[in-house]
Image 1 (cartoon, helix red, strand yellow):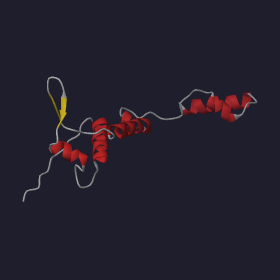
Image 2 (cartoon, rainbow, N blue to C red):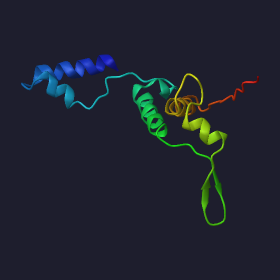
Image 3 (spheres, rainbow, N blue to C red):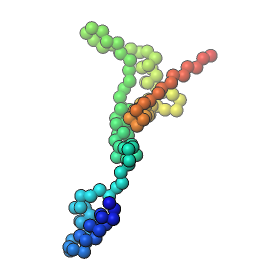
Image 4 (tube, one colour):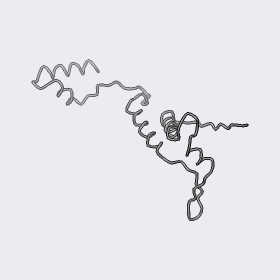
Length: 118
Protein backbone atom coordinates (compact mmCIF):
# COMPACT_ATOMS: atom_id res chain seq x y z
CA UNK A 1 0.00 0.00 0.00
CA UNK A 2 2.75 2.46 0.93
CA UNK A 3 4.84 1.64 -2.15
CA UNK A 4 1.88 2.17 -4.47
CA UNK A 5 1.12 5.46 -2.70
CA UNK A 6 4.71 6.70 -3.18
CA UNK A 7 4.72 5.63 -6.87
CA UNK A 8 1.42 7.42 -7.43
CA UNK A 9 2.73 10.52 -5.70
CA UNK A 10 5.99 10.54 -7.66
CA UNK A 11 4.17 10.16 -10.99
CA UNK A 12 1.96 13.13 -10.11
CA UNK A 13 4.96 15.26 -9.13
CA UNK A 14 6.83 14.45 -12.35
CA UNK A 15 3.78 14.87 -14.56
CA UNK A 16 2.49 18.28 -13.47
CA UNK A 17 3.77 21.73 -12.58
CA UNK A 18 1.74 22.08 -9.38
CA UNK A 19 3.51 22.01 -6.06
CA UNK A 20 4.04 18.76 -4.20
CA UNK A 21 2.08 20.02 -1.19
CA UNK A 22 -1.06 20.63 -3.22
CA UNK A 23 -0.75 17.13 -4.70
CA UNK A 24 -0.54 15.57 -1.27
CA UNK A 25 -3.46 17.61 0.03
CA UNK A 26 -5.74 16.75 -2.90
CA UNK A 27 -4.83 13.04 -3.10
CA UNK A 28 -7.50 11.91 -0.59
CA UNK A 29 -5.48 8.92 0.58
CA UNK A 30 -4.87 8.22 4.24
CA UNK A 31 -1.23 8.23 5.32
CA UNK A 32 -1.73 6.39 8.62
CA UNK A 33 -1.76 2.76 9.56
CA UNK A 34 -4.73 0.94 10.99
CA UNK A 35 -4.91 0.05 14.67
CA UNK A 36 -5.89 -3.56 14.14
CA UNK A 37 -8.85 -4.63 16.23
CA UNK A 38 -8.29 -2.04 18.99
CA UNK A 39 -9.74 1.33 18.00
CA UNK A 40 -8.82 2.70 21.44
CA UNK A 41 -5.19 2.98 20.29
CA UNK A 42 -6.23 5.98 18.17
CA UNK A 43 -5.46 9.47 19.46
CA UNK A 44 -8.76 10.70 18.01
CA UNK A 45 -10.77 8.25 20.09
CA UNK A 46 -8.79 9.05 23.24
CA UNK A 47 -9.31 12.78 22.67
CA UNK A 48 -13.05 12.21 22.27
CA UNK A 49 -13.15 10.22 25.50
CA UNK A 50 -11.24 13.01 27.24
CA UNK A 51 -13.71 15.66 26.01
CA UNK A 52 -16.66 13.58 27.23
CA UNK A 53 -15.00 12.98 30.62
CA UNK A 54 -14.29 16.70 30.96
CA UNK A 55 -17.92 17.56 30.31
CA UNK A 56 -19.19 14.87 32.71
CA UNK A 57 -16.92 16.25 35.43
CA UNK A 58 -18.84 19.54 35.35
CA UNK A 59 -22.07 18.08 36.70
CA UNK A 60 -23.14 18.65 40.27
CA UNK A 61 -23.87 15.38 42.06
CA UNK A 62 -26.64 15.52 44.62
CA UNK A 63 -28.97 13.14 46.35
CA UNK A 64 -32.69 13.77 45.76
CA UNK A 65 -35.99 12.25 46.77
CA UNK A 66 -38.83 12.36 44.29
CA UNK A 67 -42.31 12.69 45.68
CA UNK A 68 -45.55 12.83 43.72
CA UNK A 69 -45.35 16.47 42.70
CA UNK A 70 -41.83 17.68 43.48
CA UNK A 71 -38.19 16.75 43.86
CA UNK A 72 -36.55 17.40 47.22
CA UNK A 73 -32.80 17.83 47.51
CA UNK A 74 -31.32 15.86 50.41
CA UNK A 75 -28.42 16.91 52.58
CA UNK A 76 -27.09 13.42 53.21
CA UNK A 77 -23.71 11.68 53.03
CA UNK A 78 -23.66 11.34 49.23
CA UNK A 79 -24.30 15.03 48.62
CA UNK A 80 -21.79 15.99 51.30
CA UNK A 81 -19.19 13.61 49.87
CA UNK A 82 -19.35 15.06 46.36
CA UNK A 83 -19.60 18.64 47.61
CA UNK A 84 -16.11 18.38 49.12
CA UNK A 85 -13.69 15.57 48.22
CA UNK A 86 -14.60 11.96 47.49
CA UNK A 87 -11.04 10.90 48.38
CA UNK A 88 -7.92 12.60 49.75
CA UNK A 89 -6.19 12.69 46.36
CA UNK A 90 -8.92 14.04 44.06
CA UNK A 91 -11.49 16.76 43.91
CA UNK A 92 -15.04 15.88 42.89
CA UNK A 93 -14.36 17.12 39.37
CA UNK A 94 -11.25 14.94 39.02
CA UNK A 95 -13.05 11.94 40.50
CA UNK A 96 -15.98 12.19 38.07
CA UNK A 97 -13.67 12.69 35.08
CA UNK A 98 -11.57 9.68 36.10
CA UNK A 99 -14.64 7.48 36.56
CA UNK A 100 -16.04 8.48 33.17
CA UNK A 101 -12.66 7.97 31.48
CA UNK A 102 -12.41 4.44 32.88
CA UNK A 103 -16.01 3.67 31.97
CA UNK A 104 -15.59 4.80 28.36
CA UNK A 105 -12.08 3.39 27.85
CA UNK A 106 -12.37 -0.02 29.54
CA UNK A 107 -16.19 -0.42 29.70
CA UNK A 108 -16.18 -0.59 33.51
CA UNK A 109 -15.38 1.44 36.59
CA UNK A 110 -15.24 0.11 40.13
CA UNK A 111 -15.59 2.40 43.13
CA UNK A 112 -14.78 0.91 46.51
CA UNK A 113 -16.00 2.79 49.58
CA UNK A 114 -13.58 3.05 52.49
CA UNK A 115 -14.65 3.89 56.04
CA UNK A 116 -12.42 5.05 58.81
CA UNK A 117 -13.17 3.37 62.11
CA UNK A 118 -12.02 4.75 65.40
